[in-house]
Image (cartoon, rainbow, N blue to C red):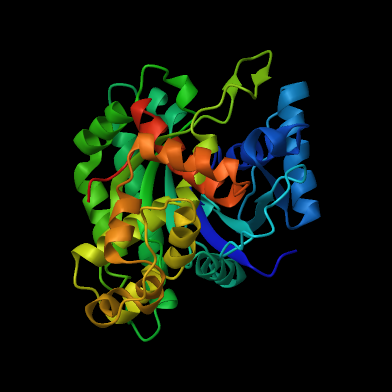
Length: 390
C-alpha cells in the first residue's frame, strides 16, 4: 500500500429500510467484476477483506438470486476502500503525483438511532458512531421513494417526519459531541438530499425532487439546517438541503433484481472526491472565515488541485506570499489564485482536453479526477444531480 494516500469521507444517513445496505453493496459489487479496472482506469479494493467479501456476496445475491441483503441494525459501520491505478496500466515514472491512491471511507449510520431513543451502552455506541464520521466532507440524507409512494398525496407527512427525526437525532447528540459546548471545526459541511430507490418513481427527476422537498417540508429542512449550524464553526460555510441526487441501486421486480440498471451510484465516488474541493475553495474565496476553518476546508485541496493541474499548461504554479496566505497555507503554496479560479471554473470542453492530454501522458490520476468532474457535469445535464449555486 502506498504511503501517499488522499483520504475522503462520506456519511450516509437514512431511516431503517431506506436502502443503505443495498446502496453500499451496489457501489462495491461491480468493482469486483472482470474488466472493471480497465474500463475505469482504477481498481477499488476493500481495505477490510471480510467487509469486501460480505458486500460482494450481497451483490451476487441480488444479481443471481434476487435476494435483498439484510440491513445492519443498531450498528454504525465504517467501510474503507482504496482507489488506485488499475493493475494493467503502467505509470509514467517521470510523473510524481501528489498522491498515489484515494481512500474513500464510507460511514453507515443506523436509521434506528434517528427513529428511537436509546440508553446505556447503546447510547454510547451511538455517540461513538457519530464521532467516527465527523471528518466527513459530504453527508447523504436519504429520502425513501417507497415511503413517498406510500404517502402519495400527503408526502408532507413523511417528509416532515423524516427531517424531524434527522433534526432530533442530531440534537440529542449535541452536548455529547461538542467539547465544552464549542462548535466544531471538523464537521460534514455538505448535506445532500438523495432520493433512494428512485427507480420506483421513474418520472421524478432531480428538479422535481427539489420542488417536492421544498414545497412539502421546506420549514423542516430549515430547522435541520439550524440544528447543524449550531454544531459547527463558521456556519456560513455550510450547505444543508442545497444539493440533490437521485439514487437507485438496481431495478427491482418480483422475479429479479437488475443490478446493471443503476442511477447515481457511480456518482458517489466523484461526489466524495471532487465536490468538496470545488465547494470549499469557493467558500474560502467568497467568505471571511476563521483561519482554522479555512485550513480545515482546504486540507486536501492542494493535493487535488495540483494533481488536476499537472497537464494543464495554462495553469502556472507559483509561490505566493502576502494576502494569498489568508486562504490557508496549503493552497497558497500550491497554485496561484488565477490558476485555482480557472481550475474550478473549467468548462466541459477544457475538461475533456485535460483528460485526453492526461491519458496521452499516462497520467491516470489526473485523467480519473478530471473524469470525475465530467461525470458531475453529465449528471446535472441528465437531471440526476443538482449542485448548489452557492
